[in-house]
Each structure stands twice: as C-alpha cells, then as structure tokens.
Amino acid sequence: MTGAPLIQTRDLCKAYRSAVETVWAAREVNFTASAGEFVCVYGASGSGKSTLLNLLAGLDVADTGDIQVAGVDVGAADEARRARLRLDAVGVVFQHHQLVEEFTAAENVALPLEARGDTSSAARAEAVAQLARVGLAGLEDRLPGQLSGGQRQRVGIARALAGDRAVLLADEPTGALDSAATREMFTLLRKLSDEGVLAVVCSHDPRCREFADSVYEVVDGRLEHR
Image 1: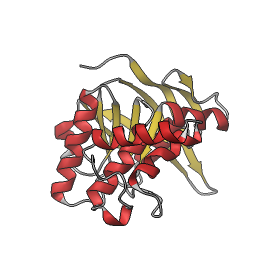
Image 2: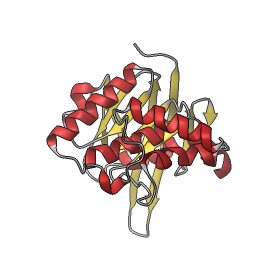
Image 3: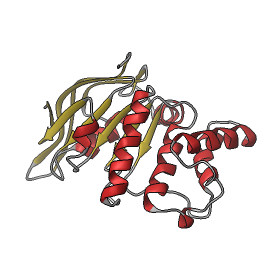
Image 4: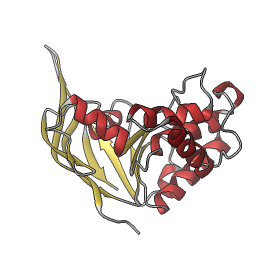
C-alpha cells in the first residue's frame, strides 16, 4: 500500500544544446510517486533515465518545470539546500557502489550521518541497524574488499537509507551483479518499499518490472507509463 506523495514533477524539462542539435534528457515530465512505492524506470542508454534521477536528487538543475521532493521545492532550492535534502530525505545508489575502500561497512554508512552533524556513537548505532536491515548483520567491520559485489551494493543501500531517509533513487543498482545477486537486490528493494520507502529504480534489467508497483519507460526524455 502506498502513502503520501513524496515526488511530484510538473512539465519538467532538461535539454543539452550544441551548435548543431538539441538533445532532450527530460521533456515535459509529469510524475508522481508515493511512500511505499517501487517504481521501475527503463529505457535505452542515453534516453534520459540517469538525468531524471539526477534532477530528482538535486544533483542537476532543470531548465523549466517544477520538482517537489519530500516537501522541498528542488527547482527553487540553492545548492546547499539540495545537499541538505540528500542528507535528510533522499538517498542515491549508483551502479558502482562508490564506497570508501579504506573504511569499514559501518564507517561508510555512517559518513552521511556524521556529515549532517550526528555524533560518532549515534552514527555508528544507526549504521549497524541499517546494515542489519539490508541483511548484513555481523559484517559491520569488514572492508569493501572483504565483501562480495552484492554485499557492497547492499552497503550502498544502507548508506542511502541511513537517518530515516524516505526516498531511495537507484541508478542501475544491479548493473555489476550476477543473476542471483540481481534477483536478491530487487527482492531487497521490494522489501524496503513494503516497509514504506519510496524506491525509484532505473534499470535495463527486465526483472525489475516483476517487482515494481509502477513501470515507466523513458523515450527521448519523455516519461511514458507502461
């Protein structure tokens, strides 16, 4: 069951222009997604999937249109406010986990918590809890090099959720995983959605659609419901 809307866009547009052409990464995107929803977004490479996630996360800025995420007007927010939104409400997961290799799993998860001002002890406790939530209890003190690819990606998800962030944006989170780990990852994302997290997942893998509540395709920047 889904809850209150956490993402709303209206006529969202983003284009990259050169002397010879205009490439639409987002074109009149109207999109609503709610707490507890698993949204699958698919499309060909270069269709605009990653740009859409970057706009929702405030990592990129739209040309025109409105974006509301977790009650924040992202389009009107300055860079500092958008960064704070990511610390407080929106976690981003990438295809490559982007963990700090010299830090343990718990230290990696604690990073954004300490960045927003949590004490080291509180950040550690929350990191341990989130790692358990994604199935990594007992592995808190392992370095990334001591974990499998699927486990490293789970650390990335725990880091993205730490601090009760309600929105999870995942860009090809299974792109570097084998078939078994891929299914486990989609199963985990489905579980997190059932717990109330809004998960927006961009994926080339058709199995993503099996787990999703809503499926969209990006075609030349346009978002089409399937």
